[in-house]
Image (cartoon, rainbow, N blue to C red; front, side, top):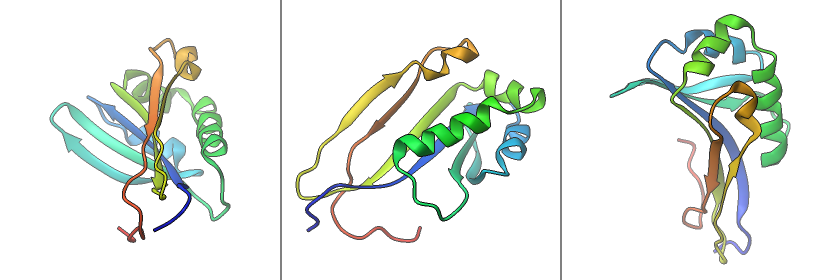
Length: 130
């Protein structure tokens, strides 16, 4: 069993009733879409940053924020209309699991309620490629 809980990645999840294609295109230079699928209330897209450079959770979220702030109007519309904007922080659980949850006001500049992010470690052990 691992001793220390380990950070793995941060995914950005966005759900909206309308097409998220313009958002996918705007984020393409810095992030790829892991999932793009219909839900009962619209479309859900999950993004992960491109590149092999290891970043911590804060640096990853900052890179996403920079990309989101630089988007044009075509991509801004589905972002503004989104019903869900969430950072999903992945960790590999260690022998002493901890959990942490916090609300962030970072997205108030878009005139929407705060986004939320939370993390809790999963079971200790190896993570598959899936």
